[in-house]
Image (cartoon, rainbow, N blue to C red; front, top):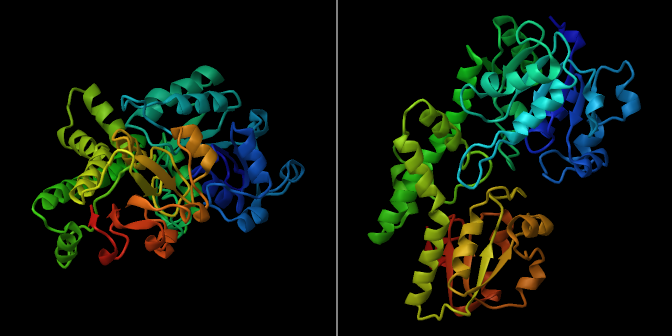
Length: 437
């Protein structure tokens, strides 16, 4: 068993999840952050985080050089894209993405590749902890066999495993990694104690030790499934109330006066968690012979909201006697959520794609998104300069993402007297919009 004073931690994957965690571990342990993207490592070693999850000033305090990390210094974070440089670590934490394919089937390739990389440097006594969202059983059924095969070591005799689901909320500066209670688990009772102790040493909110790895995996996957179902419910309510000519947000405001009413609001459900995780649980359920009715119904409804919103915009423009083909429409926001540069699995793109099928000319403005990433991911030219907007007059304006900058945008300067303003997020003052979700 590794003594607490001898921990040397490797964090595999330095994205939205891995970097904040690596920074916290680097404050207390000798930590090496590993990522296969060379440009990401160069960026971090220049004390810059394009995800905006960690302040540059904080990176400057914790990131150290290779020379320093190789000394007897017990703290600091060294970032590298060279696998051999994590060989001397004894705790490996894997935080790579777990996406779905175009058919909504789980893709474990990043997890398998990360396991192969760790397997090549795994030694007797080492612990491998997974944070990536998976279905119950994936760690021990899919990942551990890879570690055994590559390393030649035997599970729970030569090396051990743990699972501690990530709870990062991109863009949230209040509920940061140390402020959210962490679920932990281990492949043996003793290792569960070790894993819990490692996380408890850096998580201010404390930890919760699950009885098994499968319990921890299941806890993670139902967290976002629950949110997905609740959002699907209010999205369905918005469709019903729209037909009844009732303002959904006013209904929810009234309902919130009851102490136990859950404050969910309608909208787009994208990103790498809520829009993906339910499919992992559904896949495993179907493997054991159960068809999950509610989970998949919620997914179907939420996945079609972008098309629904675009259709509502077109209907409202027609009511204003506006010609759709050739009209000029502005969409505000393309990231998957407000005040965050993350464009992964953004459902705002569904609005754009549906609108252009009506031969409308659609501009997209987002001060948070990276234009090159948007072009690469969605083949969409992005406006990032507010000055460009002022050169246009739009027939329709859609607020798709509630970035704080949009509150200060004077829509009167970019819209025509007859223009339609549609607010997906109920973010703008009600008297400034023509319709909202």
